[in-house]
Length: 407
Image (tube, rainbow, N blue to C red; front, side):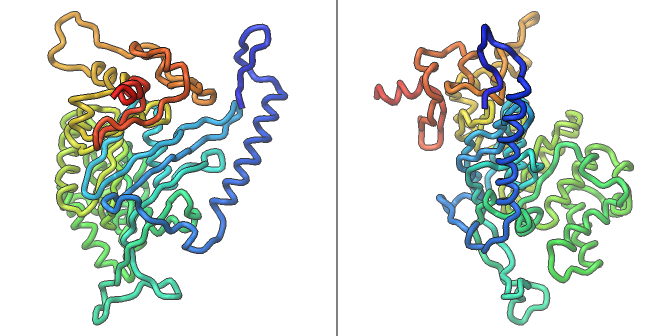
């Protein structure tokens, strides 16, 4: 529903009648989506297949919205991208473009009832315990500690919320951008790390949990004896972030989502954390989804890059293609606006003019049109589709529609 109408000129407020209509519409949709999220169903309803067996995660046409008094905010509006096995995929874009909301959708951490996954698929290849009819893990023949494993592909967007424990924490782990708000201040580091083992490893003992926690602390470069019994406030920001990484790794996940893991850290510690993530990626049999607004971090860490703008993917490709041959005017503008040591004295840093459109009243044409210096007459038409310009490089821009049609 549009919140603006033209009556003798455009007004920028809602009437009581419009507010009531929006509230009624939102209430009906939120009730339907909450019921679907909390339904009881058979596993077959959310089992699926990967389109490409080499991927660990496939996000397809994902829509995540927030229902507000002014209307529906389409924070994620038809996002599609893949995370291959043993790869680092970097998601980049300015604040508010939908990077973090996409990752929170994958983890099913969108706060309802106002926030909801409205449509789309999130396919994830899980490697989990094989269970008997009672739901208990099955031990391997002749073993008392090792369990039989099985591969399954889940559509996370269709999973009831009470089933998400199958993958959250164990199969997909998340490193949040501010560790001080993610760690519980009243429990020691050891207690919080041990909890991961108790929750995800069947039959885990106290000794086993402590040994696993100490192993993870050593992996991230921390001496366990100095930190295991400490509280979060006793550690520096860099140490807390290392603890968060250790916690994410404790259950040996297949996918780690790092949501701006270095934003709250100084430059020296940032470099250490990035080196640590790179080392961990080489040691674990898994993938990393790295979310950041820092192009330098993406260039250093990523194998593939996804560029987002106003809730949509506007370009994606290998890190070489995005940095050496960017296609979308927004991607080009992002790279030009990054400070470099080569700027002459007195040279102004480039900035992309204009503002992002209102997320409640998005236009039907290209969202970047009003800020683009390269737009053509065609840009006033329908929103551009994704055009493939190489086997791994895709861009949503009418400039390349024309190139494709011409040859």
